[in-house]
Image 1: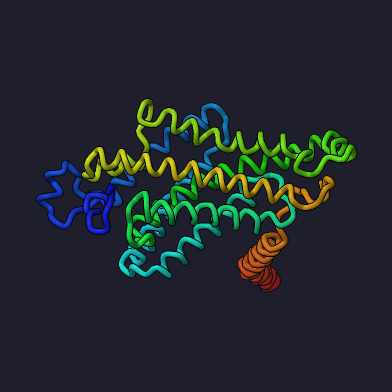
Image 2: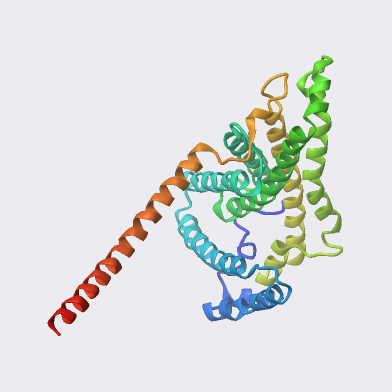
Length: 330
């Protein structure tokens, strides 16, 4: 048994007994917001490099830094309430929200090309692959009688989703680009009687290979060249080193499996429309629901801008009338 349901005092990064916690060598949780402020000054280094080389990344750095602080703070506040509730339905609801946001990020931000129905296919591929591996891994590999234990299941699912997002984005982007660029070659295969699987197999194989390479490379250098952040966090918090090592090994194998399943499912869906090439279903435009959302936001922005400009216009008219009246009086 690696982890039991009653063990994770060191796993959670805190101990119920401060003396025992200090004996493990953990760092006391004395970090405050001004410590975060000190660390944020390191971003100035990136800004100086950007200005010096003319990279024009200053605005992106600022926005990303603000998003990092805001998003992690909100996540921390939400996790505190979820951990206190200890309710499987709340945990699963939060996982669904994370999967939805992950699919949204893949389709809108990471993919330059999209096919019809891509959001639903990515949502199902990402959700099912991570949930299946996450549930089985939490229950048996991590030895949790209640697989939905929020302190273990949510961080584990977060790591699976993060790696699955990157892999699915790489795989689908490559596949859709090849379908567009090798249109004549694929149509030739189809004209000679090849099925969609036979014609698209080389593209699918290469897409899955490219998507899996980062995970394979990470497993090959982990512990030899790099110490992963999750393992480092556990060691800093006072967890026994070998426990952190075993947990990292389990997580890497879970990531590898969920990534492979997610990429395979998303690539199969992109090739499963018909036995002929349908490049008309590939586009660079946003899905209609997100295009509608952008249009609503633009309408709101224009409305707020008009409301903000109107008082200034009225003030200018009043000032001009006042000047005219004073001139008439003189």
